[in-house]
Length: 92
Image 1 (cartoon, one colour):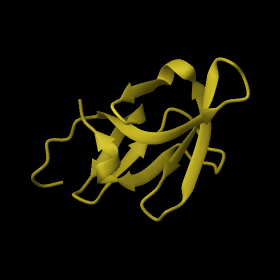
Image 2: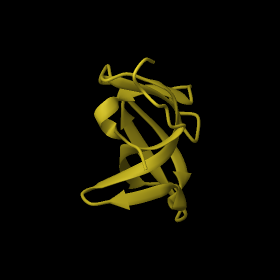
Image 3: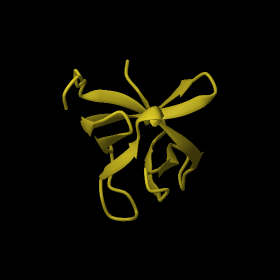
Image 4: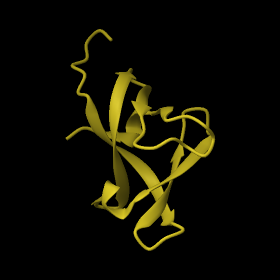
């Protein structure tokens, strides 16, 4: 994309819920079209920022409005790629 220096890794804001086992959590992410996708990850995949939780993702592409990311696990809905709002990404 013109005007962007793409960084491959970012933190994606997410909702964290209890997992099925003690050492995992359920992650819920809202895509740009409002769909919620979910998957389980180990507890240590989640990072806490002030007022929010996030997981590490690889950014494949992005614009001012959205980012296409590779998630750390396949979602229950079937894919490990999601298009998320750009405001949900934090580059560190």
